[in-house]
Length: 120
Image 1 (cartoon, rainbow, N blue to C red):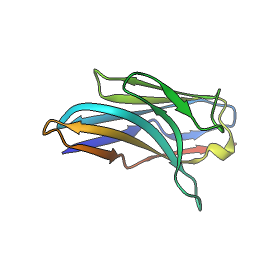
Image 2 (image 1 turned 135 degrees about the vertical axis):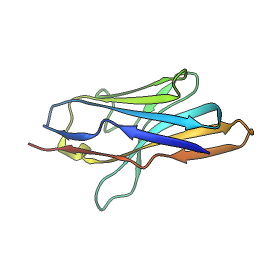
Image 3 (image 1 turned 30 degrees about the horizontal axis):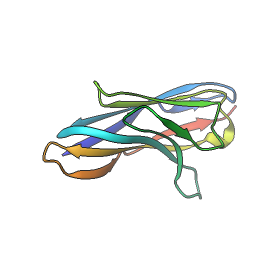
Image 4 (image 1 turned 120 degrees about the horizontal axis):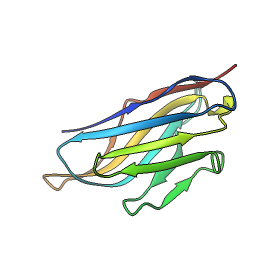
């Protein structure tokens, strides 16, 4: 089995910063794309940022130039550095990993989410 566990969420004032982490563990051979998604109250889950195994990153327009996604493959961990946070960034943030298991199954796994609240 594979688990993804997010951490780093919390309450921050507008203009502040947070760093989210997502660690994958279990029967992992490799991880292809890793991404961060978010879901605000009453809205659909949306892609925030995604990073390939080669390190190429793409971002939602709403977070470009404010958020940075990185990964540490030695730790099977993906990070999301969030700067200049706005109230509209308030959401539950979910981690996703496209995992190749040791049994060579290809499957997408999700974390349970971490809440980010941007408010004064």
